[in-house]
Image (cartoon, rainbow over all chains, first blue to last red; front, side, top):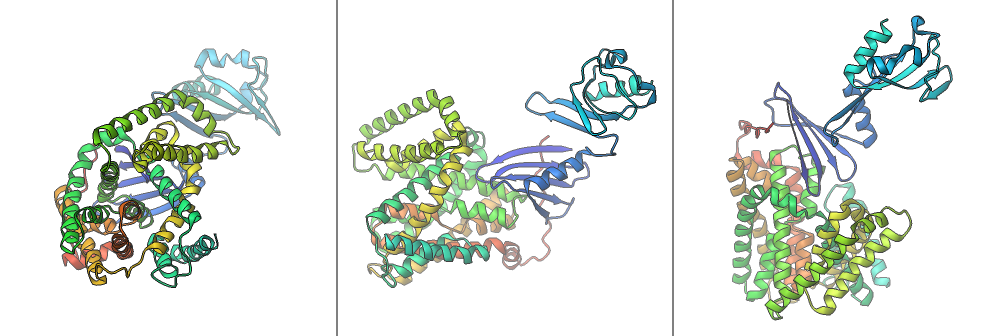
Length: 161
Length: 380
């Protein structure tokens, strides 16, 4: 996989990705605000082109990153390429019976796995930044943030326990 | 005043039609001007207001061009820019100059015609690449850098031609002094200017408008080439926030540039005599042929391929805004007629050539099934 980007003055920025099979996908962020996406099949000369609006491109982007998989297992990975490739994963989980009745303090989530619970959704209400004394109930949806390795530990040690 | 309004309404109607047919608008503005002006019905003449508005159009065209100039990027890509640029410059300048001189233009006039003959329309080339969805082609990068090279040549020409009267050493010193002071002011005030640009009241637009007019008026007063200074000013302000300045100056550029084109047509008399209409058409056709030669040479040298040459040719045929700017700045009446015709012919032909370049390749190379050229390998 080879990726290159180039700034074309007066046109916009181009990202071109060549897959291992030799197909080419190129995305142009035009100065007009629209996005042109070209795909060129290996060994052919004429690309196909789709012109997307900003919103359409973002929609396509989330599909490609696989952000929305299942309703109870949503995850998004955010990459800050400017900050030496800082990557943060945000993941949602549903609290099961074994964890119900315990507080954040009891579970020692951050100490054990490095993962932070940043929000809990219960029924119609949401709690952002729950305090350590916060007690979970079965069926709470929690939003956890951390590195993908930390999230794996969280799934194994806390959710799996 | 009525004249300007009438001209603008005609242009608006024309723009509605040409945009629907996705044709370039510039030649039609000039045609509109020719029809309602001196060469045609003589409904509209130039007055103080139209002269001022056309000046604004030219200033904002040049300022906008300056905003896009990024010296560091040009420096990084100099090898890509230089090879094709030098071929393009030599072929077209020489053919344009020899043709103009042979047709009886004076030495200075031939030079002006050659410059207008050489410089393709950046606006039309870039629009055609986007609208015809040709950005992925290997040639599109070559074309973009070629346009940049032509812009740089234009800047040098503007500095050189505009200053032939004065003592050159004194002028260069004066220019250097002004530009360094402006640069310093921008350097020191950049944070402040950047915050001003983010406001959502009238300040950013007022700042952009008065800065461009201010620097132009100042250059004029102290006698340094205005067009060159405005481009340099654009390039310097572009280092602060290119996008913001583009957003705030675009409405001025768009409207005043239309006035500029249509009044160029209005004040141009195609029938002044001195040079026959036949000769003018000959130059226009030569302008297409000459870009064919340079395009083919560039295609063969850079992409080792004739079909690339045709692609480069078809997208660079159109002469436009900069040719008209050169004519407006330095042209005599005879030159204006010649360049107006050349822009109309080349831009209309160019629009169709760029749209149907694949058909042209088949027609000209007579190879329906040419083996696709290998794509440039992408460095990891």
